[in-house]
Length: 328
Length: 136
Ligand SMILES: Nc1nc2c(ncn2[C@@H]2O[C@H](COP(=O)(O)OP(=O)(O)OP(=O)(O)O)[C@@H](O)[C@H]2O)c(=O)[nH]1
Ligand SMILES: [Mg+2]
Image 1 (cartoon, chains in turn cyan, orange):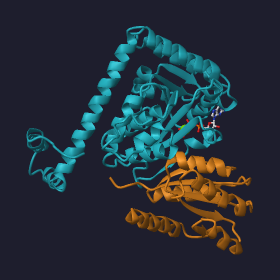
Image 2: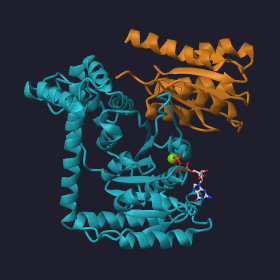
Image 3: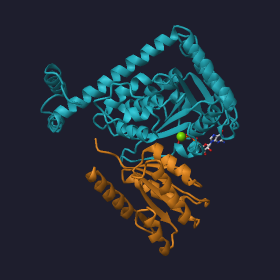
Image 4: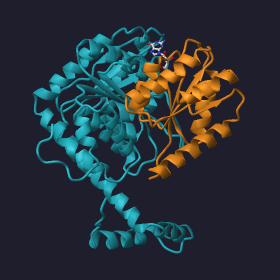
């Protein structure tokens, strides 16, 4: 696969990944997550080979059955002959910095299938936000040639919204009996959900939830592409309703690809991604340049000897004006 | 940024008790590790593939069914076949003392008996990871 122009930079992971080396892919994902220097060089090499996968985001409150749904979706997608990548994100404990990543338990039966690659990520407390490394891991799966990539995230915090924005189709999962919670979470989710799922629909309250949800969706603002988010009922544990759900995803894809919406979607995504990378990189370089000085500044603000506005201006002037050259 | 330690905890074999494995998983999380828990009744193939895809540093195997002599070495063998022979494999559960030398020979680098204080396991993993990082 060598195109005559061997990469000078990087550690050769990208070319190995493009040749189907699983170990190299896994290694690069690790480097992305650990923010190892030089990782972007590999990503630059992979980038031209990305953009082919269809990305589905799945988010919702804890325990609603997201992983079980993913497991069932993998099952169906594989039957359709599609290869699948999964990125399952779970929160890092703010106390220890550790995490238990348990989404995989529900999907383990697919781990011996060569057409499936599942990766668990912890939110960590990264500079560029969780979304940065998630997006890059998705890029790797994309370059590996996965047809469909599913991103599972918990909750509906800012991070999840960011991640969902990177998906072509975002699925929000709810369950009956959430009660007033739905009120609390509606703000963020109504806008990001392209498709809503009522899982555990065999449980009492599914009708009520569907009615409430429909009402809220009707009150929400109209989408520019005319898409009206459908509501599906599933019983993931039994595999019920998954086929219909996937059909809904493909219908949403058609809507995306048809109209002007597609170009706009691509542009919005490109803008968000570019800004995010710039933001993360500026922060990284600033902090690198500041080093120990940061703590001194923090101390000055904390003891109210200086105001944070002046200090921030000073820092920005110093670094942005003189340029922030760094090997990165 | 400092590299996090990633550990896969898996239960090969047919026994369905995973309380011990879960306790270990939580303790490792509290020690700051990222723990991927794959649940009970895992085949060596499932475990090795999960370890490969998850890019872990350590695989912790727990087995109560008595089949450790077949299952543990098989995991090591598969990891090596898949180019992930650098993963540290450790074991626990109900393992007769006499079996330990054979397991170590097969590449299970340490075997922890029930009742081993968790800190001992945490310290062992930390120490081994430091050694590896120094080796590059
Ligand atoms: N009754 C019922 N239980 C279900 C259904 N789908 C999943 N579950 C159960 O719900 C529990 C949580 O399922 P998961 O798939 O782990 O849920 P999740 O949303 O991924 O959970 P987190 O990732 O921890 O937020 C498990 O015990 C599942 O077996 C369903 O349709 N009906
Ligand atoms: Mg889950």
